[in-house]
Length: 79
Image 1: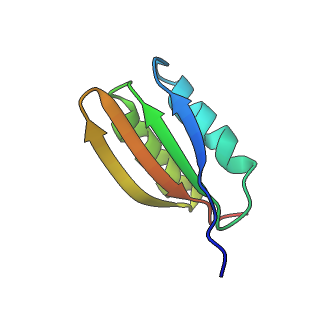
Image 2: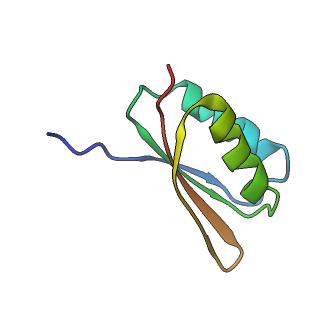
Image 3: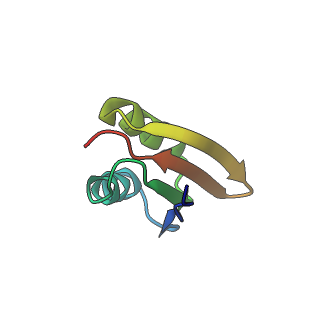
């Protein structure tokens, strides 16, 4: 079994709606089973990204906040 390295997407400094739009675009280009790690600074991302992931059918594996940064780990499920 091979370990898949996550794709990292730094969206620091971008304001709504750009973080969720760029996250959605990145997920579209990933194969099922891939992991996407996203870092944002826009507080609205804490709501927008989990909602987008739920609607897309993908899985939010982790959501955490450290200081001004929001981190998300998303597993691509839907084709």
